[in-house]
Amino acid sequence: MINTVFDVLKFKTTWLQVDLDKDGFFTSTLVDRGELIYRIKESADTYPELLDSDFSCQIFYLNLSAKQTFKLRSGINSVSFGSLFMFRNGFRVFPVGEEGDDYWKVDRRHQQGYSRTLGTRDIMGRVDIAGPESKFKESSSRDKGLVETDASKQLFDYVVTKCLRRLENYVVGVTWKDTIDKTYETAERLSLDENRSNIIDVVSKLSGAKDIQLLDYSHNLIDVLDEKSNYFEGSVERLAKFAESIENDHLKNNIDLARKRFIELKKAEEEALRIASKEMYARAEAEKKAQQEAYLRLEAEQETVRQSKLRSEAENKATTFSTAYDEEKKRNLFLLSSENKDKEQLESFLHQIVIYTASAKQKITSALFEINDQTKELNREKIITSLSELLESVDKVMTTSRFATTANFKLDSTQITDDISAYIEQYLNTISTAYNSRIQIRVEKTSKPFTTKFTPIELSMVLDNLVSNAKKSRASIIFFKIETKTNGVVEILVEDNGRGLDKSVIEPNRIFEKGVTTTRGSGLGLFHSKKQIEKMGGDLILPAQPEKGFKILIRLRKT
Image (cartoon, rainbow, N blue to C red; front, side):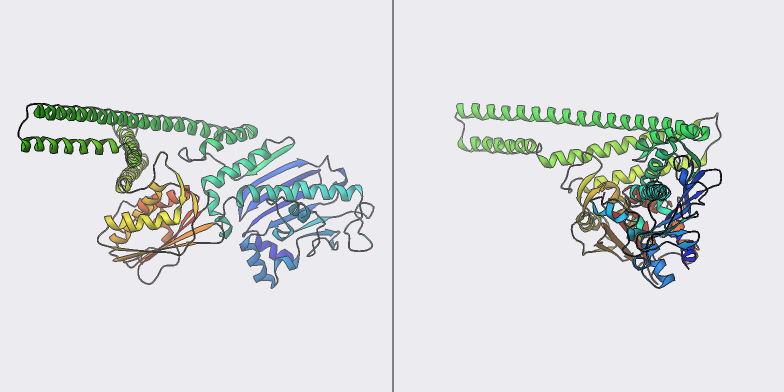
């Protein structure tokens, strides 16, 4: 029964398989929900007592899906069943792996304050060995596992340091860092830039280790990240060392090309910042000049009043001049008061608008250059990508301009740390409602404060896009339900009463692909929205659809 259940778990969770061949080499294979992560080979010279023992080890990490699957198939909880068992010559060695047994010292380490480690509740598997009792002898009391010998000590050391720890390094370094991923039965979230960067870190450390030969690895996940990704810089150096260690010229070439594109991207960003700074300086100089002129006008008025008093003009004329003086003074005080926090906030948004506009200009220039280059065949995909990025920049300008005068924070950088659930509620009730008169926006917030780092511009673009799509589908109401979950995740369920998904759409999840549309739009709105949410470490999910209308789910985790 145990082998049958293990076969099912292979596609539900992360697992490690280690085998010792007759030539004296260990081969270790790590797989995450059907996706090969790495396969390595190393000599067994440092474990001579294990040679000719037919050693094999298979360990599974019990994520939520694995635990549920195990109970469904076996009828009992995984904890009650046991953890990491041992078999000698095909027979169980008791009590190794039993509930409450800690032969492998897994729980002892876990209880010593190492919170980021696996416990017996988190693993299940088996260790198989063959050999005479002189090497592997079961204790006569049958409550202590194997009698201590050189062979049993080497077995213990290898299982703990080379099997358990390697599985743990991956689970802690990749799986646990993405709190949303633990609810997934498939490996789709592994393709997110943050997770790919973490996988590159794990595998590059192994490939660079002495006496380890990398036989295979995930070519889908361990590759160059998009140079626009926040994780590009951190991952590319590790990836370069990895490519060097395995002597992969193709990967080296891809890294070099990506570095060049990254440098070009940085230059474009620096140019956008330079233009923005120049614009801000020009505006500041203009305001300074206007302020000086206002002071000169005030002084002129004051001089007029003084002269009028000296000439002892009529009282009504003096009153008129006094009124003019007061009005001019008020105008000056208003100008001076524009140096307060509100003006600084407004300027931060204007600064951001100039950056986005300069970025859009760069993208237009790039697209025009591509079109006008007679030496190369027109690359349609490249033009579409440039126009897609241009549309994204324009959306950022529109979104920024909408709440520039109402936002109660400065946008000195693209990210802020605040209560994201409150932000969503206030943005929808204040900004979205004001700019969308033909649809009723309802918000229900049952969540507690959820403080995290996020990008307000990009999050607002997602909200705007969902409202816009609802309007295009002739919805009269769009409903946002914001709820904080216990696992450090906030969920925003969005539902409208429009036409919903076209019944002819066979693969609904294709609506997130570039160019796919059911509303005569560009087919980029949901593509950009999913990309923005994933950049924030979240997910945009298409749940089961209602009979009428459209439903979509946003999930965000704390970062």
